[in-house]
Length: 325
Image (cartoon, rainbow, N blue to C red; front, side, top):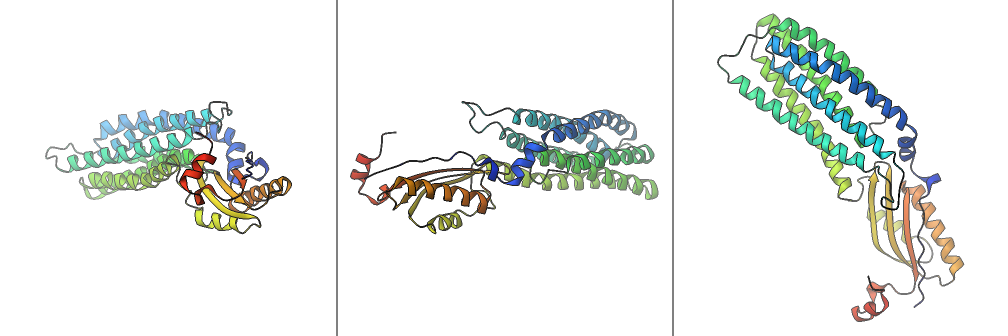
């Protein structure tokens, strides 16, 4: 049996738009992360002091969340910088996946914060000797905090739909903004009707919102790290698409995975009926271009062989033909 193997290089000119956007907008992303980090660090200390003075659990929870956000933003900033490192002999795909790890850690951090706030709210609810909450400093600080958190969310929102690392940082800022709204509401209710208990209720509500936002981030990060088929791609549809090409006899060992958001890869072994090398090369080029254009794949690796697929042969014969691993 005659066999020819051909592997494609990445089609940079046909890669999906989000991959190129991630590269082009990286300097802006770094500037946004730096500015957001500076704002968070400068305001978190203020909130901690006011939370101690006002005896507000909701404000203290928000301050603690902002401290963790500073760590999360620092992690996102480090991951963004590392993702710029060029590919090497040891890291042939580059370092973009480090951002997926950062997104996963940020998601886990959000869950931890949510659990901590929920526990504190539950404990505070059952405290019989809780100190009286001072609503005015609580309200003023929360309003300023809402401005800071909203500004950070606006800074990080562009690109968060196509960048998992940036999305993790953005979700931290969004959760902080929601926390600020909750603290403002609690301060107003305490001031108007002396509903001290609403402080704990708001804290619990904020915890639930933070946890709900973290779960999709964690799920998508794990999905990518496990190299599962991207949710927007269908392996059966891609197989059917390949089988439509004249000369394709069988599609085997199809692998589809995500390197980073917007950077999807595919590898497969195809048995073709063409014995002429020129026809096989032309078919290979057609397959590459079609997969990149139709499915947005930025990395396509195909092996073409002429003859009967090894899977159709008797195991003893296949072992004699297959090269040793």
